[in-house]
Image (cartoon, rainbow, N blue to C red; front, side, top):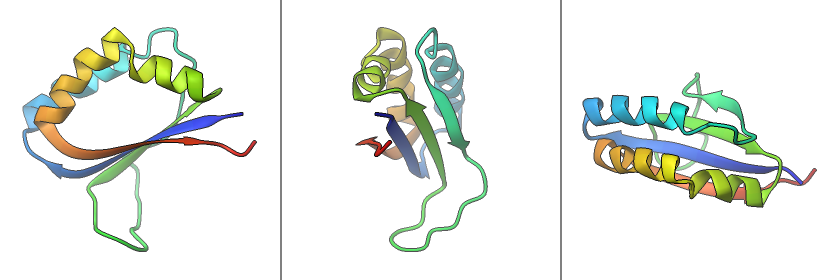
Length: 96
């Protein structure tokens, strides 16, 4: 069953840290089986607080999503994300 990780950026704190994160996160993909379904494209908040952007990643299953998120390469990138912006990160199991 597919699984998804959604990143919702609420506020930018440091653009340089975010640029570093962006490069490192792309490199952290490695051989992990993920597909970017949305990446800071146009969006509309229908309910709740406004945000700056959304990334939606698809994985074959929850285990693959966790393996990528907890990988040393992504964890090294995450340090810069936490310095660069306020995010909400959500892992959700799909229905297919």
